[in-house]
Image (cartoon, rainbow, N blue to C red; front, side, top):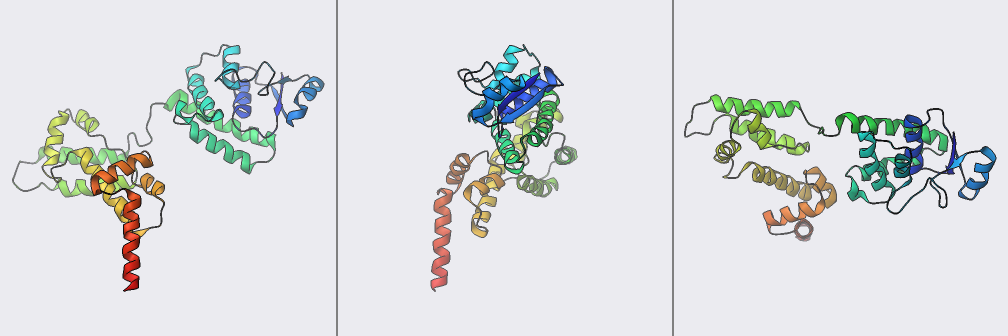
Length: 287
């Protein structure tokens, strides 16, 4: 089969050819032409037009062309269904449909910016979607730092603690754990106390209660947030990073969450805190 669509593809016009070649017709040919020429060239080439208005293979309601191909050819592959949500979110600017949609849009737009030949762009896109399919089929539920050696180190610290006798003095693992938490905050590492407790076959509340004795009477989550805010304050004081960048560097999911926790901890929102720091520096220069 031959397929034709408008030039300069980004999402649907790359995702659909990948879907066709992998699940419908591995020998399919694809053509990209100016929008005004699609119908005429389709007749000349004997190609099927797609992802333009007024043809069968196009958008319907809130569904994109990729969705229609899946429906038309009755594709039931679970990984394809996962990819469909991502493609739809990226192609229709509804990134809430799948958290990966924004990333797919960013990478696709970047590829289109770097590669000016549409067929070369398609080749690069095929590699991208092959990788996305492998992730959806095999790694969908896996986290980036799952089975990380840092997680194993943290478990080892807790095992060491369990083997130590109780005493009035803080055990040796406390200082070590403080450094480890700081390291992982710096690396955007997600620490899950419940998972740690489960793997140690302990009650999570017991581990949490013991933890707080040596960490400013804070539970595990509050202590990690405290360390993140301390790092944020340091970055505000010593760098010119934007508040969005600082939110990312300190492990917050978004800037609004960062702002809320920062204000709760310091009494000021980050922008007001930064302004106060800047005013202090100006006064020092004036003196």
